[in-house]
View 1 (cartoon, rainbow, N blue to C red):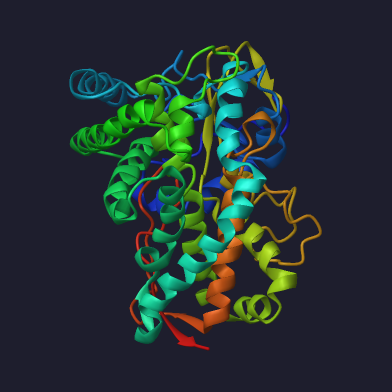
View 2 (view 1 turned 60 degrees about the vertical axis):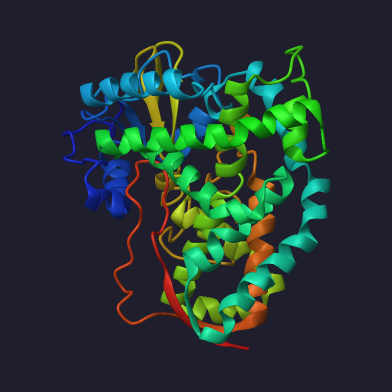
Length: 424
């Protein structure tokens, strides 16, 4: 190991609820002491510096997305749980197929070309009037109250309603779907008890039985919706359409979760930051044409709705001078990279005048750059614009100083955000 890369193993446990609630001191410790750290809890190599994370994501030949060839966690309880849950899918539903985040080229490129059509610029532009109208309708529902629980009142429904609209799924079902997407996310977060993991799997199976009749109907009667396209269009290079198992994975991971969760959590984080730093609100709301887009980039950099993801070393290799054996699972921490003072000045602060606002890795980089990044950015811009047009100032409600996030190894999501505000 190179100088500064070795050292005593830090006493860090990312599955400790206190660490999960505020992981940033742990990230800083790892960046400074052991930036490529073999986590004794999971057996994964945790990568925390910006340059090292970017090196991994930009080299899919050395670092595969297919982590199935090695368990993501070597913890015996995690392995036993995975086997139990696989049996549930096989007996009661459809075993989820690998999603985009688990595929390598050429399969990844071929499947992505089908899904990219859903998030193409023309489609996003066409969505904008409905997006603005929906944002204002949601604000109408709470503006007269002078307060709201922002996550449920705005951050969740706006992006989820847009995905439902595009998929041809009834808007009235958004809260039912939110239960299912939450179940999928908590599974990804790796911080569940065995009973909670089983419950999450059963909720996902419930979602599968909700969507399956839609697949069957659209095969017989295509209707031009995005879901109809996913059901009936051949995957380029595959010579076939998606199977039911592949469709269920795409519905949960690549459309409903991928198309809503980043926006939801960035909306919540952004309003939280506005409440905590009124001067930032004043600056952004006073000149949104100049500062709103950079503010959005700062929100996703600072809070990183996806804290990290996984890769598998395809051969014996090194990261930043640290030997990493073949088939080792590498945990790349975007959230740590985005606060690396080797890359960003004053990384823990909001700076809406950074010279390169999009230099962060919140949406990844390279081949696996986030499929829904353009949609998320547009949703955030239109949604925050509506809030600025209608609201003069945000404040946390009394007693809301101790905000909490859902425990997760992967996703950063506020549970609730009780706010009060002055309307314009």
